[in-house]
Length: 236
Image (cartoon, rainbow, N blue to C red; front, side, top):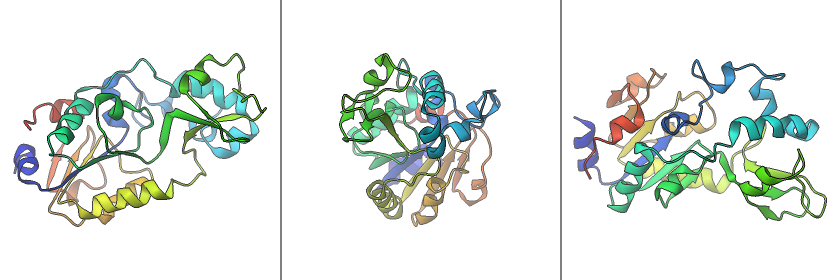
C-alpha cells in the first residue's frame, strides 16, 4: 500500500516525530554529519545539555543554549503544515514530538504531546514563576534570573532528567490505540522516547526518515526521504 492509501483507510492515525521533522525549517538536528554532536565546543553537547552541567555551570549552559537551541526565526515547514491540515480534517489524532521548538503549534496543530518539553516555556527554579522565551533572549544577564533571585530554567528535558509522567501516559495511550503510526525524522536511538513505539498494536507502522533506522524491517512501509517532501504529497 502507498502512504496515501494507508492514511485514507486509517480510522486513527498518530504521528511520532523527531529532529528530522524540523531540519527543513533550518533547525539543526543532533546526529547527522552537520548536526550539533559533530560540532566542536569546549564541552560535548551531551554534557552541556545535562542537568548536572546546568546546575554546575549555568553560564556555559546558557551560552550554548542561546546560540544553538533557540531558533526563534524558524517557520513551520511542509511537514508541520500538512500535519495541522490532517488534524483539522479529522485524519490525524495527535502529534507526539521529541522536538522542543513549538513549530507544530505554530503551524496550527492542537493536540501536540511534547516529550522533551519546549523552549517556549521557562520557569523560576525558586518561586516557579513562568517566563517566555523572549525573557530568556532579552535578559541582560548571561544566566537569566527571576526578581526573587532564582535561576530561570527552560522547561526542556535535559539529560539525567525524567520525562513528564502525564505526557508519557497520554503518548503511550495514543500509540497503543491507533491503527496507523507514522514515525518520521528520527533515528529511533533516543530513549525512553524511542521505546514508546513498542506499544503500537495497530495495522500499519510507517517510517519516513532520510537514513535507515533499527526499525526499518518491522514497518509496513519505509520511505527514505525528507519528511516534508513526503507528507506534502498527501491529499486529505
